[in-house]
Length: 637
Image 1 (cartoon, rainbow, N blue to C red):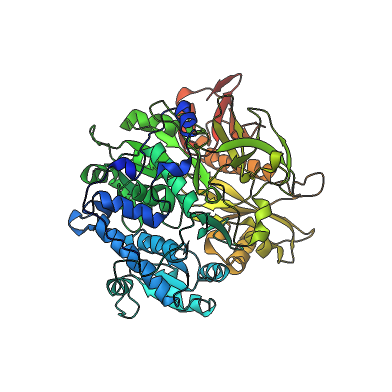
Image 2: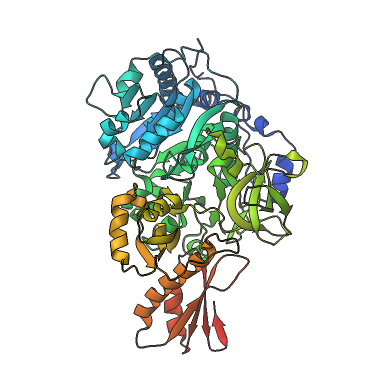
């Protein structure tokens, strides 16, 4: 048995974690002279939590805001309670699985129990978070693929897949135990099970920081499950890097509006706050899906003394267009991820609020961040920053089998590849590894493919131009185009089909299908949309539009050439927007010229008007592409 009680004796803060704020490239060079595991004392997540609790057991570790945002309804957990509940959760999971290490799935919103279950699970065995907004069939597929035998979920925090729990369990027979958060069923209530357990670990956990501890779903919320194998060491290193980028001080209050099934919410925010002994502020169970959180953002910042957060550029834009912030708001860092920060937003936000938007970039397979914007200096808008400490980045050319061909020159576009301690070993289904681990890299080093096209400039900064992989990101859903394409291909009138993402200011992307029908067919786009609603298994994957085209663009070897379709969908969308705005004012044309960097929409007008140009630029602000207006021989950008 391991005693997990935190000592009330104050400890030197450097015994727990080394606090360092990255302010420039030289900081990264100096950090890399040290071993990354020397940056924190606890080499497992449980030990890190115990070390943080030993500093100040009464300090609030986690605060959950009520959906109503009423301050009297906040739920507060001290580090002492946090540590005890994680210990109890680990004991429950081992006990329910007959003393053997379990695979624990947690399908929960942003509530303390989600993180208690997570750290209890990695201590007892293996953890897998599940998006509660998935369709039941996809939840069951994840449970089966992971070998999950315990599920922690809830029906008490709004609609979710748990509302159809019986349907899920019927096709996931490996799950032998279900625990429900805030349940009236005494036998299944998670909190009652916690209270019945000893607050100290009743077993000796695996001390190997390089052993797989988490299966994190990636690659899509539709289609074949893909589970990245993460380790405690990889998670802790990236959590430490998160603090070095976004704020390492003990007095930081970390706003968590990103879900716990996402690498950002789980590792870069929640685990970061635990590692550094900071306070995690859960921005209601719904996070940024709760519009009241966005509308009352600055009130929350002030009332809760929030200092740091991660949000998407879309959320930042909504905040920019909302209430004004008080001059003494106290927010120190605002980190953006998930998509590129539009130039207009990256300029207007700090001008309005005095806080820079610093873009980060990473992937589940990298345990989180792999690009960081140094603090103090102004960020390079459009770049995701320098490679994270202890990691290297290259732009490379690979063949269709993900085999290394060559490293491209600085400033030239290639697939961004990463090498370092946070590159995971692959997936639970090893047959999927070849698409991630690049074969044939020089010196047989392990490099992971990000699946993103980008460039590395002369100063070493990474610039992401777009995705080499096809996944469509619609809000919180990663959609595999294959799901749409297979459904539509089953229709007898369809010859070729390709699904892509159409840029959207709110959702990031919306799925659209391009279809070439057989000669002589009279089927309409509306009929095919109706067919999709019946045949596409995931609602979020159902296309918002079907584009009927005479001839599908193909490569020289006969493969569908999706880059041409991505240009076309931007043009179609721009035509729709401008036809409404410019009716009776000016003729126009749109195009997407070839570009080595981020896509660019070129709008050509027949008349010159500064006010009209300004209106048009405003219409296209917030999209993940640049916009340029050409009027006769002049240009406005």
